[in-house]
Length: 141
View 1: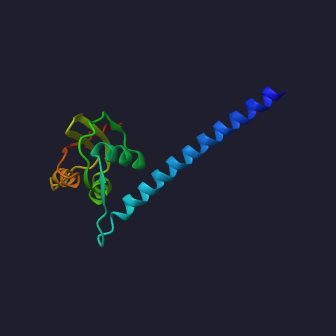
View 2: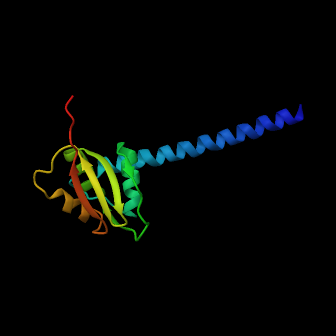
């Protein structure tokens, strides 16, 4: 009877710790998501000091964009979050793929008519990463 009681309490403690961990992760994601939308405010510029690879991982997770591959951590840089959020709203980013340590390919649904988004995204990452935009081919059914 004592062993059953001990197993139950240990299991409850582990479940409680996992729940707390999951809630903290969710809170972090919700806070990041809020910062992305606040970054669109033209009255203020939100800049985050982060590694480009980690930022793009969180960016993809927050906006449900698959991020494939990984990059070396490298050096942290100042990242302008508003540019990436605005690019997603205008171009509809569908996939982010790391092609090498300093190159990332971003698949978009809408064509970049001006041709300036690639350079703006590079500048938003502090020039540490080369960004190449690719228009997603829509398959007709």
